[in-house]
Amino acid sequence: MEKVCLDCGDVLRGRADKKFCSDQCRNNYNNRLNKDSNSFVRNVHLLLRRNRRILADLYEEKKLRVHRDALFALGFNFNFFTHTIETSNGDFFRYCYEYGFSQPDDEFVEIRLNCEFLEYC
Image 1 (cartoon, one colour):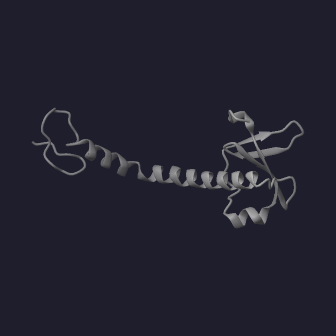
Image 2 (cartoon, one colour):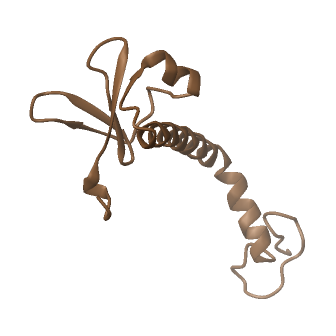
Image 3 (cartoon, rainbow, N blue to C red):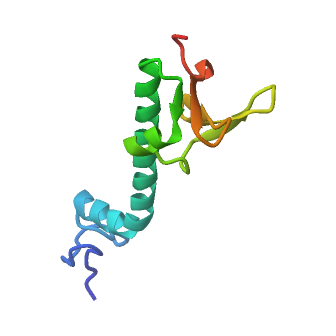
């Protein structure tokens, strides 16, 4: 009985334990297997990058206190952040990588940069 490539179905030649005829077939097969989990990670990463870019742009413009609706209008998603840090006075800052945001009230958001992660601060 001849063994065939798990991706393209071509007859395999060479080692007895060979499963794929080429690296391309091996990559295609594994990419197809992992497509769902890779798509989820890719989508989350895109949301985190968008949030970070929005916070970075506002921070560079010196807009450190912004209305929530303005962030929504820019496409910011408050449900996606990388980590949370509690300050010494009990406030919570949620971070998208090095840029953080806090919601001291229901209308406004405070933005700040966490210099622990950066060499140039």
